[in-house]
Image 1 (cartoon, protein in one colour):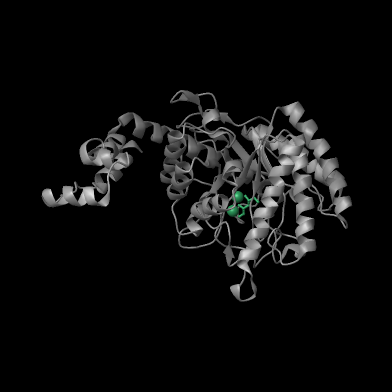
Image 2: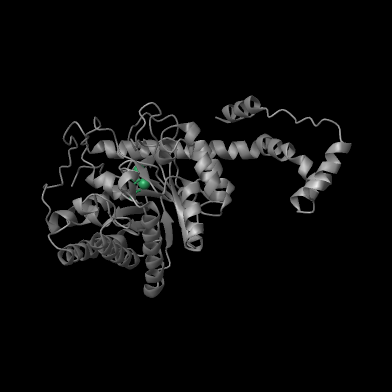
Length: 434
Ligand code: XLS
Ligand code: NI
Ligand code: NI
């Protein structure tokens, strides 16, 4: 199979003009005490890479996948898995992520689908063994099939709910079997098209019950991977219950699930929610729930989940600042939940796209490290809150004061003056590091 380069992509340095070489990503280069490879823990999304055909609401697929015979046969699915592992080898990515229905076909009955999945998982298991590649997380596709049109764990129909539960049970089992380091819940259809026909409270109760059952089953089978919830505000639904980090955290707290889940934050979902990626990361981090990242980006003036490869250096810098702040990933990683453009239809564009994303993150890491080494930004932030380090501020932080104490203090004090926020100075320091 000669679709991808015959040799693995190499680092050639910033001067290289070779589109099939890394200019910045050097897996074993140590930055801030860790190799690039360990900082990023890059993952590849099976659904975009192997199953994305470039179709959009106005046109059919454009992608040329010479290895794919276009059938739903098991042998085609197994062959695709082999091509995928060859691809991982060529681009030097150690982890992957999949939905049950990306890797194996959905058949006429649940029992047949389970059997098909087992057969493909046999192949994945062999490929993992021979290559050393690992599963970052697995998941169940609970949004494509017509049965899930009105939700899965929030469907108004109990039989659909049960079907979804069965699918998640099986997906957890195969994730466990493949040594998956995590399992993701993305509630694509868990939301509503209109509140006029929806009992929202009942649906949320059902969703929480569903997740509790998954937590119980995780213990039962001894799966130790991390559970993630992936926020997204809309698309396909008008409103998705897991709309952003804050909404997810609130839901998890309300239903006593916070100990069992972390968040998998996706860049383009953050922007769809009207937030920046840093906002979503900071919100998750503050709750000690930043688990993993689905790395991509959108086009601000387009407005939907375009899942582009993350090539914006400002974005990768800010993402790496957040990751460095939390000391790096434990179970999570940077999963490229990204697809090449419909116009980039040649198979080799899959390689180009991943190189572009990996190089952009390598630069983001180096810039973030420079910002941290430089120290001015951190020092400024520390100084900005200095009035809370002693005196009345320290009393407030330690919970020693009442409103009456503060009134007494304010009455005896002069009109307070807050120092300049210096946003432009900070922005310019970041630019200097770029
Ligand atoms: C879709 C989501 C999806 C999840 C996995 O927008 O990003 O791909 O990551 O179900
Ligand atoms: Ni995603
Ligand atoms: Ni997405």
